[in-house]
Image (cartoon, rainbow, N blue to C red):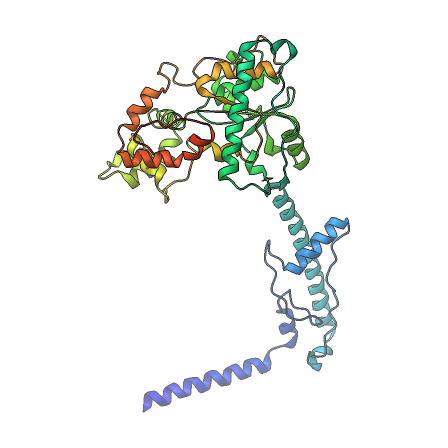
Length: 431
């Protein structure tokens, strides 16, 4: 009984205290504590947040910016509406000064919000995909010169190009739906630009890309010889421009008027070449980023040293990672599909070369674009020069470590590349 009375007394005391506090609260302080987004002649507004604005405000900003006019501000009137109590309408000078201070604060916040919105808009325009309506390329493979038409070698290579392009187009027509043919900067992010000879080259790693970049640098006058250009200069020097670095007009113009080419390689052979390069040699990126995640997920009873360094990934573990739909780490351009890297069903490539016939195809391409006669495609191996190149025989040795099911799944993974570029099945038991 005593406990109940005590509890009731506490509640009553608290209620009385709250009533006294509300009664003594200064109306001027109530006004001062209003959220900046509240104006008495407008309905309640949500408090403003960084980088967030209402849909109506965004539409007005977009419209005004497009028209070249300054954004229209909301009314700054601080006259109280009819719903405001009479006591608030008859405030003294102190309250008035507070309200004007609030007005200046609101103006500043609105100006900051507009400035922030414009900055965000510029960032979005710069980073977001710019949709480009793309039709068939105006330029196809350059025609043979009159003196070359009697040359059986050039004629044969020219016919091979026509056949490769035909197979690629038929595959795209059969398996891909590209009625809209919309190309975004993402689709051209792997394409390098050489403006002097009007060449676009889509980079496919492990298919001669380092030497092709050397050739482009010589064509552009950045070096006199491909032998003078070091590996780090090729890949980290940023001397070559990428197509996605141009604006809408620049991308569209080059896609329609430059000679577009890519070089591809047998998918399994390219995959083994990438594995050997990235996981069988010291590497301060692929071991900690990919190696540690692969060993942690797919190796039973992994040692602490392997988990710490990510070194020593086995080919079978690498294939498990590649085929896992829930990979512990994302894809990489060195083993991604050519179909995804270069988007050949969206971009009409004029020349399709193959790593297996690199010297012949590359020098034919240089002849077609009118490159200097003393410029030929380099034969040297860019990395690990004392190591044998990845061949068909070496590729089969690596894939022999896998089960038939894993080989089939790997073939299915690269099926579109096999089909589109007319490579035969690497193993007889594949279907």
